[in-house]
Length: 236
Image (cartoon, rainbow, N blue to C red):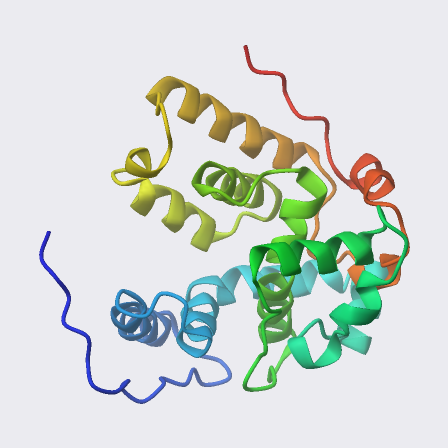
Protein backbone atom coordinates (compact mmCIF):
# COMPACT_ATOMS: atom_id res chain seq x y z
CA UNK A 1 0.00 0.00 0.00
CA UNK A 2 1.30 3.44 -0.90
CA UNK A 3 2.16 5.53 2.12
CA UNK A 4 0.53 8.94 2.46
CA UNK A 5 2.98 11.68 3.24
CA UNK A 6 1.95 13.66 6.31
CA UNK A 7 1.92 17.40 5.62
CA UNK A 8 3.88 19.69 7.87
CA UNK A 9 0.77 21.71 8.67
CA UNK A 10 -2.92 21.55 7.92
CA UNK A 11 -4.36 23.65 5.10
CA UNK A 12 -6.87 26.37 6.01
CA UNK A 13 -10.20 24.99 7.17
CA UNK A 14 -12.83 25.43 4.43
CA UNK A 15 -15.90 27.33 5.58
CA UNK A 16 -19.36 26.63 4.22
CA UNK A 17 -21.47 29.72 3.54
CA UNK A 18 -24.89 29.83 5.18
CA UNK A 19 -26.80 28.59 2.11
CA UNK A 20 -24.23 26.78 -0.04
CA UNK A 21 -25.07 25.42 -3.45
CA UNK A 22 -24.66 21.72 -4.18
CA UNK A 23 -21.48 22.47 -6.15
CA UNK A 24 -20.02 24.43 -3.22
CA UNK A 25 -20.86 21.59 -0.84
CA UNK A 26 -19.21 19.06 -3.15
CA UNK A 27 -16.05 21.14 -3.50
CA UNK A 28 -15.84 21.75 0.24
CA UNK A 29 -16.49 18.09 1.01
CA UNK A 30 -13.68 16.98 -1.31
CA UNK A 31 -11.23 19.46 0.25
CA UNK A 32 -11.98 18.25 3.77
CA UNK A 33 -11.90 14.60 2.67
CA UNK A 34 -8.30 14.99 1.46
CA UNK A 35 -7.28 16.12 4.95
CA UNK A 36 -9.35 13.43 6.69
CA UNK A 37 -7.54 10.72 4.74
CA UNK A 38 -4.39 11.80 6.62
CA UNK A 39 -6.00 12.98 9.87
CA UNK A 40 -9.25 10.95 10.13
CA UNK A 41 -10.00 12.08 13.69
CA UNK A 42 -9.57 15.83 13.13
CA UNK A 43 -12.80 17.28 14.63
CA UNK A 44 -12.85 20.56 12.71
CA UNK A 45 -12.42 19.04 9.24
CA UNK A 46 -14.71 16.16 10.22
CA UNK A 47 -17.48 18.60 11.13
CA UNK A 48 -17.18 20.54 7.86
CA UNK A 49 -17.18 17.29 5.86
CA UNK A 50 -20.28 16.09 7.72
CA UNK A 51 -22.06 19.38 7.09
CA UNK A 52 -21.10 19.32 3.39
CA UNK A 53 -22.57 15.85 2.93
CA UNK A 54 -25.59 16.06 5.24
CA UNK A 55 -26.77 19.67 4.88
CA UNK A 56 -29.53 18.76 2.44
CA UNK A 57 -30.80 15.99 4.69
CA UNK A 58 -30.62 18.27 7.74
CA UNK A 59 -32.68 20.93 5.95
CA UNK A 60 -35.29 18.24 5.32
CA UNK A 61 -35.20 17.24 9.00
CA UNK A 62 -35.63 20.91 10.02
CA UNK A 63 -38.79 21.06 7.91
CA UNK A 64 -40.03 17.87 9.58
CA UNK A 65 -39.27 19.28 13.03
CA UNK A 66 -41.43 22.34 12.32
CA UNK A 67 -44.45 20.05 11.99
CA UNK A 68 -44.45 18.60 15.52
CA UNK A 69 -44.15 19.99 19.05
CA UNK A 70 -41.03 18.03 20.04
CA UNK A 71 -39.12 19.22 16.98
CA UNK A 72 -40.23 22.84 17.35
CA UNK A 73 -39.13 22.81 21.00
CA UNK A 74 -35.72 21.42 20.09
CA UNK A 75 -35.14 24.05 17.40
CA UNK A 76 -36.32 26.83 19.72
CA UNK A 77 -34.08 25.80 22.62
CA UNK A 78 -31.16 24.36 20.63
CA UNK A 79 -29.71 22.43 23.59
CA UNK A 80 -26.05 21.51 23.22
CA UNK A 81 -24.26 18.26 24.00
CA UNK A 82 -20.80 19.67 23.25
CA UNK A 83 -17.95 18.84 25.61
CA UNK A 84 -18.17 22.21 27.35
CA UNK A 85 -21.83 21.55 28.23
CA UNK A 86 -21.32 18.10 29.75
CA UNK A 87 -20.09 17.11 33.20
CA UNK A 88 -19.05 13.49 32.84
CA UNK A 89 -17.95 13.30 36.47
CA UNK A 90 -21.41 14.31 37.69
CA UNK A 91 -23.13 11.97 35.22
CA UNK A 92 -20.93 9.12 36.41
CA UNK A 93 -22.31 9.57 39.93
CA UNK A 94 -25.86 8.80 38.83
CA UNK A 95 -27.14 5.31 39.73
CA UNK A 96 -25.67 2.44 37.66
CA UNK A 97 -27.89 1.52 34.74
CA UNK A 98 -29.13 5.07 34.18
CA UNK A 99 -28.42 6.65 30.82
CA UNK A 100 -26.15 9.33 32.30
CA UNK A 101 -24.09 6.85 34.33
CA UNK A 102 -23.70 4.46 31.40
CA UNK A 103 -22.81 7.31 29.04
CA UNK A 104 -20.02 8.48 31.37
CA UNK A 105 -18.80 4.92 31.89
CA UNK A 106 -18.80 4.27 28.13
CA UNK A 107 -16.66 7.35 27.45
CA UNK A 108 -14.29 6.51 30.30
CA UNK A 109 -13.81 2.90 29.20
CA UNK A 110 -13.36 3.83 25.53
CA UNK A 111 -10.98 6.70 26.33
CA UNK A 112 -13.24 9.14 24.48
CA UNK A 113 -14.11 12.78 24.94
CA UNK A 114 -17.37 14.45 23.87
CA UNK A 115 -17.22 16.51 20.68
CA UNK A 116 -16.52 20.22 21.00
CA UNK A 117 -18.02 22.24 18.15
CA UNK A 118 -15.62 25.02 17.24
CA UNK A 119 -18.05 27.32 15.44
CA UNK A 120 -21.72 27.85 16.40
CA UNK A 121 -24.37 26.75 13.88
CA UNK A 122 -25.79 29.56 11.78
CA UNK A 123 -29.21 28.04 11.09
CA UNK A 124 -31.51 25.14 11.99
CA UNK A 125 -29.98 22.74 9.47
CA UNK A 126 -26.46 23.31 10.79
CA UNK A 127 -27.74 22.87 14.34
CA UNK A 128 -29.28 19.52 13.45
CA UNK A 129 -26.02 18.41 11.81
CA UNK A 130 -24.19 19.39 15.00
CA UNK A 131 -26.76 17.52 17.09
CA UNK A 132 -26.42 14.34 15.03
CA UNK A 133 -22.63 14.39 15.39
CA UNK A 134 -22.89 14.87 19.15
CA UNK A 135 -25.35 12.00 19.64
CA UNK A 136 -23.68 9.35 17.46
CA UNK A 137 -22.33 7.38 20.42
CA UNK A 138 -25.74 7.33 22.09
CA UNK A 139 -26.79 4.84 19.41
CA UNK A 140 -24.10 2.43 20.62
CA UNK A 141 -25.48 2.69 24.15
CA UNK A 142 -29.16 2.13 23.43
CA UNK A 143 -28.80 -0.44 20.64
CA UNK A 144 -26.07 -2.49 22.32
CA UNK A 145 -23.93 -2.56 19.19
CA UNK A 146 -20.27 -2.87 20.17
CA UNK A 147 -17.50 -0.39 19.46
CA UNK A 148 -15.41 -2.81 17.40
CA UNK A 149 -15.37 -2.63 13.59
CA UNK A 150 -18.44 -4.86 13.20
CA UNK A 151 -20.36 -2.89 15.80
CA UNK A 152 -19.49 0.42 14.16
CA UNK A 153 -20.70 -0.86 10.79
CA UNK A 154 -23.95 -2.01 12.43
CA UNK A 155 -24.41 1.46 13.94
CA UNK A 156 -23.90 3.00 10.49
CA UNK A 157 -26.46 0.61 8.99
CA UNK A 158 -28.88 1.38 11.83
CA UNK A 159 -28.36 5.14 11.28
CA UNK A 160 -28.96 4.72 7.55
CA UNK A 161 -32.27 3.00 8.26
CA UNK A 162 -33.31 5.41 11.01
CA UNK A 163 -32.09 8.77 9.71
CA UNK A 164 -31.19 8.15 6.03
CA UNK A 165 -27.75 9.68 6.55
CA UNK A 166 -25.55 9.89 3.46
CA UNK A 167 -22.40 9.74 5.59
CA UNK A 168 -23.49 6.33 6.88
CA UNK A 169 -23.97 5.07 3.32
CA UNK A 170 -20.56 6.44 2.28
CA UNK A 171 -18.85 4.78 5.26
CA UNK A 172 -20.49 1.43 4.54
CA UNK A 173 -19.62 1.55 0.83
CA UNK A 174 -16.05 2.79 1.33
CA UNK A 175 -15.39 0.20 4.04
CA UNK A 176 -16.64 -2.78 2.06
CA UNK A 177 -13.23 -3.66 0.59
CA UNK A 178 -11.23 -3.29 3.81
CA UNK A 179 -13.52 -4.24 6.67
CA UNK A 180 -12.89 -7.99 6.37
CA UNK A 181 -9.28 -7.40 7.45
CA UNK A 182 -10.44 -6.16 10.86
CA UNK A 183 -13.17 -8.70 11.70
CA UNK A 184 -11.99 -12.09 13.06
CA UNK A 185 -13.38 -15.09 11.14
CA UNK A 186 -15.00 -12.77 8.62
CA UNK A 187 -17.86 -14.30 6.64
CA UNK A 188 -19.33 -12.16 3.86
CA UNK A 189 -22.82 -13.68 4.10
CA UNK A 190 -23.00 -13.18 7.86
CA UNK A 191 -21.64 -9.64 7.52
CA UNK A 192 -24.31 -8.64 4.98
CA UNK A 193 -27.08 -10.27 7.04
CA UNK A 194 -26.01 -8.37 10.17
CA UNK A 195 -25.92 -5.07 8.31
CA UNK A 196 -29.34 -5.71 6.78
CA UNK A 197 -30.75 -6.62 10.21
CA UNK A 198 -29.31 -3.41 11.70
CA UNK A 199 -30.72 -1.35 8.82
CA UNK A 200 -34.20 -2.84 9.28
CA UNK A 201 -33.98 -2.36 13.05
CA UNK A 202 -33.14 1.32 12.51
CA UNK A 203 -36.03 1.74 10.09
CA UNK A 204 -38.45 0.14 12.57
CA UNK A 205 -37.23 2.21 15.54
CA UNK A 206 -38.39 5.64 16.68
CA UNK A 207 -36.52 8.33 14.74
CA UNK A 208 -33.70 9.67 16.92
CA UNK A 209 -33.11 13.10 15.39
CA UNK A 210 -35.50 15.10 17.58
CA UNK A 211 -35.21 13.04 20.76
CA UNK A 212 -34.29 15.12 23.82
CA UNK A 213 -31.52 12.90 25.23
CA UNK A 214 -30.47 15.38 27.94
CA UNK A 215 -33.90 15.04 29.58
CA UNK A 216 -33.21 11.36 30.25
CA UNK A 217 -29.88 11.19 32.10
CA UNK A 218 -31.66 9.54 35.05
CA UNK A 219 -33.74 7.18 32.90
CA UNK A 220 -32.59 3.53 32.90
CA UNK A 221 -30.96 2.56 29.61
CA UNK A 222 -33.13 -0.57 29.57
CA UNK A 223 -36.27 1.60 29.58
CA UNK A 224 -34.94 3.87 26.81
CA UNK A 225 -34.12 0.80 24.76
CA UNK A 226 -37.63 -0.53 25.26
CA UNK A 227 -39.23 2.79 24.30
CA UNK A 228 -37.00 3.73 21.38
CA UNK A 229 -35.50 0.65 19.75
CA UNK A 230 -37.10 -2.14 17.77
CA UNK A 231 -36.10 -5.62 18.99
CA UNK A 232 -32.92 -7.03 17.51
CA UNK A 233 -33.44 -9.73 14.91
CA UNK A 234 -32.12 -13.13 15.93
CA UNK A 235 -29.62 -14.39 13.37
CA UNK A 236 -28.89 -18.09 13.13
